[in-house]
Length: 298
Image (tube, rainbow, N blue to C red; front, side, top):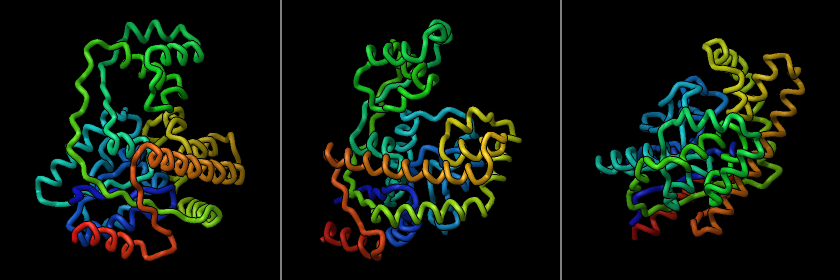
């Protein structure tokens, strides 16, 4: 018998709407697997779509201020706490999102450790070039679960800090999971159309104003740039680096590329043993999920 439903898929596939309808029927609660929805004030750009939840409780949304640190280790820890809380109240957890790393870390049980900040080590690392930092990290830990550690300088330094620490927190003891994993897919061209349509809707709904409010509240442009996609390109538009048309075109293209990377990650998860039941996005998704669940209950 399963004790976790997972709904994943690329951006703009309708995961939230499906999850909310299933949770409402099955006495469930949603745990977000989205790396940016944890931050307050980042609503339109991250597609929180809170109105779609109705009365369904949700977890790991709006738990931090924009700019605060949120690691994969922290996600695992908070997921485990939310899962135990939900199941302890005899309700069904639904893990929902498109951040493949977060989903994989739970479903395949990554053994992660966290470590306190080390000012002395950071001072030494500041003298190294970006390439030297990358090479140093790979020497310390060639098995990098989080390949994004090798992208930004601050991420590399933090990963080195964790790898060098001799007083790490113990790895999270994840609960025993018996998941049923559903994925939503659309034909590539149709997904592209959905992404572009949704982007236009988000811009009309106040996404530019949302980014401006974040900047006005003290969140730095560098921080917003690090969040990528909507926050990166709208920030560049507001700074005068891009005009509105260029902002739209570049952002639209970046989201299309992001969706391709998500699909690649999900295929990798399958190769690594995660069984994903793929649903045609044009079908009755709710009925498709309930049919599969019924097979497992009989």
